[in-house]
Length: 144
Image 1 (spheres, rainbow, N blue to C red):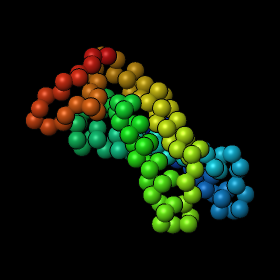
Image 2 (tube, rainbow, N blue to C red):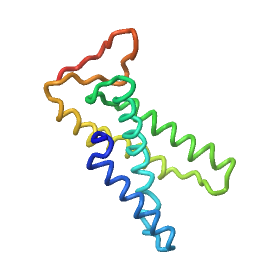
Image 3 (cartoon, helix red, strand yellow):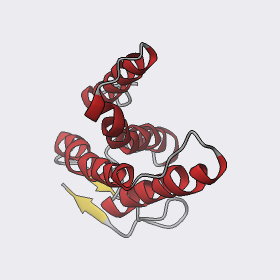
């Protein structure tokens, strides 16, 4: 559980909570209300799924997602929330700035959050997500 509740993830949750409480009491914080939640969406989702992947799938606490995988998550979230959902629900509005924030959040996660684990396991082996998990061996094993 220590992997899940690290410093940055707690900050993501606190920021999200403050923004939603301000929305609830009808006192939104203008710039933060519109874009900060989109910025932290991909890092929060990536951290949750990465923790699950580390514990239950690869069983390696130093496993990280590649930048390509994080950008794919941003693309997927962008398509779903900014293109598909506005066609079905009036609550969702497609916004290019939101798309930019999803991609900026994924780059932020790769640069800052991913380095926390890489530096923690300097003499360990880091396995990247573009490897195949299962019966085949890992082809991109990068010693730290």
